[in-house]
Image 1 (cartoon, helix red, strand yellow):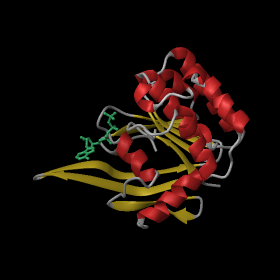
Image 2 (tube, rainbow, N blue to C red):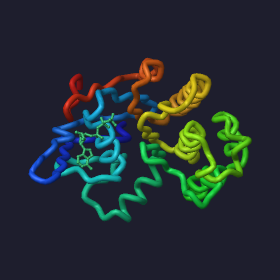
Image 3 (cartoon, rainbow, N blue to C red):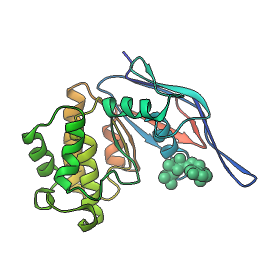
Length: 220
Ligand SMILES: Nc1ncnc2c1ncn2[C@@H]1O[C@H](COP(=O)(O)OP(=O)(O)OP(=O)(O)O)[C@@H](O)[C@H]1O
């Protein structure tokens, strides 16, 4: 069974006369319970790939399917619905609503998925050391707290697929260890996780590491 498939993704950016080929024929498949890391130097296309996989960006060629549903080349509203049902997403741009508190931000994806669960909210706040900041607004958080709150939001609805770009870039080792525990629980429950990461510790826990270089996967 395949939860997420990318087939020959291409993405070009144009600035003036310059063309950057950010993705040049990337294909991958993810199965339930898999944890996959994407590694690659800065500019190799990791963020572009994650945005295309989650339907936040449209590839110029190729397509993405989520379960049996094609994500690519659909109106944004349809992509948003597929996204809400299937993905927890933490990209480099923060995923927090500024007018909601930390606890409210975490609650929102659960409400949207119809799975509000108060003990789960408490568990996420505690696992990510945010209990004392539950009533704070995003602009009152430090960089590390913002990163941890973003992770809690991405994990909130216990999504079939978690997609995270550098989830531990701004967290300390203790929080990284707690996140890994969460990821192990997800794996045991058959949930899929895709992470772009520079963390050796995190990549070493993955079932597979895909190496991205100049918009191509070099080992798959
Ligand atoms: N909006 C954009 N307009 C023009 N070029 C872009 C745009 N976004 C990304 N690029 C270019 O596309 C290439 C891939 O960028 P991308 O952000 O996907 O790489 P990355 O591997 O995520 O890098 P990093 O690790 O630094 O975040 C880079 O050469 C980048 O400069």
